[in-house]
Length: 306
Image 1 (cartoon, rainbow, N blue to C red):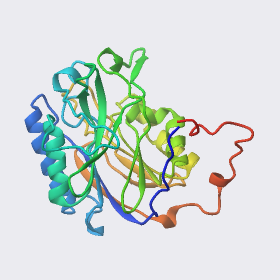
Image 2 (cartoon, rainbow, N blue to C red):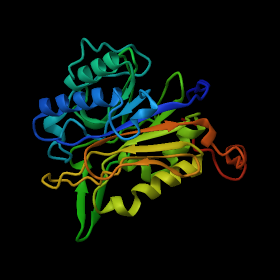
Image 3 (cartoon, rainbow, N blue to C red):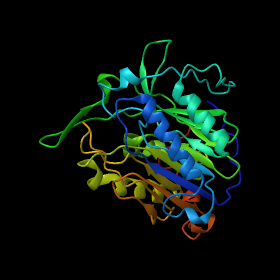
Image 4 (cartoon, rainbow, N blue to C red):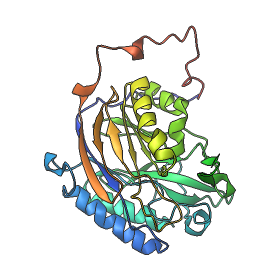
């Protein structure tokens, strides 16, 4: 059982979500376009950018590759990150990691690099993995998608990530000078235990890059984010790719963020865009103290024993 250190003091900060489009078969072009959009987000371009430079920028799930189980093995990159060990970006074999590290350092921002297909050289498994970078360009955290998107809605959509992906086996967060941020990816949002654990570990904000589709998106995209926010009294945000009807997978879009009362801070439509919003402590509901009213004498604390 590991001991979780106290979180940093929460301070208001600016968040930018990049709802990235133009994701195709050319990985180099995808990385170049993502880098250009990071530059634009850091300079304040996009809806709400007048409030100031973002402190944290987020890319969507699978930003460097088309989303699909046939594409994951083709575009998978070795990362080799180990928690608690200093990571050498210069020695990395991942071109995506190198680009994201350079972007974070050059723009002087925290950067949650959406997710990319990762191949672990030690076992050959492929994961859907988020990477996080400090303003100094250091890779400080990763999260491998825990719950794989295996669904079959007759007449609507059938998708099976487990055909090529392996699920991760850890919960993850990272600390900044303004907040502790919990991590998840897309389908992870349907499993409230993951968000509960992040909240019990002191996370103020949960951010899940995601790519819901045009079937599941209108049903549950907003509902699930609001539920996770309200249940745990945290800020919650998901960042989607833009919708591309010429692609094999049609993302829902609608990147968004919600406050701890489940009230919407910002939401995109379905096209490529950059959203900016302010994450402010004043929006936390001190008058409804559910975080101190939990009855762990009646039911278990899911964060214990990790």
